[in-house]
Image (cartoon, rainbow, N blue to C red; front, side, top):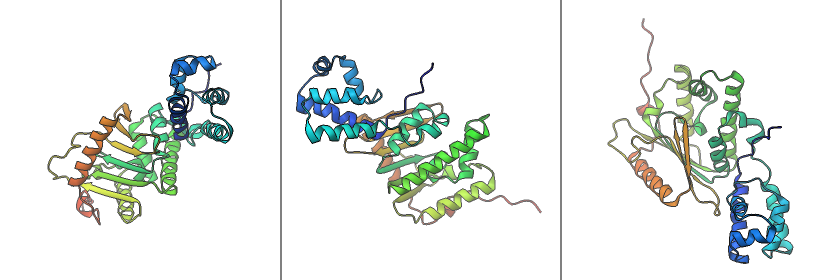
Length: 288
């Protein structure tokens, strides 16, 4: 019988993995190979546990913690964290059929991010989309997808928006004015999307900048959509690059720093509009 796909690790799982590594290194002062010998496994298994690359096994984690000398309240606390981290992300059961593995990876980061920065060169990003815009964009990017999948994809984006607002995560978007031009879903949907963006300019913890079409060259010129995610103190910042048919996710410190610098430089070239009107395409009128 085929196994169900493993849930993409949540931030709670990643944090637990980092803490297990810290206990091994700082408290027990053991190498992965030494830790593996104590519990009868391999050093590669230890590395996979500490990188959240394997499902959580509570019995195995308890054995490791005891081998590391963790006792009493500290042991109970870490085991409770392990039990909570073993739960799949909110998206897993209902939405994973319309999500790629990369989508599940970065949504785990986004779902716990305290700050989200977006570069949107071609279209309005999901966290700012209205449902009709999301649906039309999904149909364009996934031709032939069943209507039920489109409905689920729209619901997923709406759920992401709700969760981002509920936890008070800061959202900072730099939008190329070119992203306001595609007629996604028809003129009426595009107009409604523009109105929603306009209404959101005054929302707290949401910042929207626009890069005018006549801007001089800037650091992210030619770059794909990018999201920079700040999560937990135990988790480094991540950058996600969204290219056609490929998504790259990295937490490499130097790479993230370069992207952050490019985001900062592009933001410095963008405006802080109080209205989107100067950046909107002209409305076409019917003859006669």
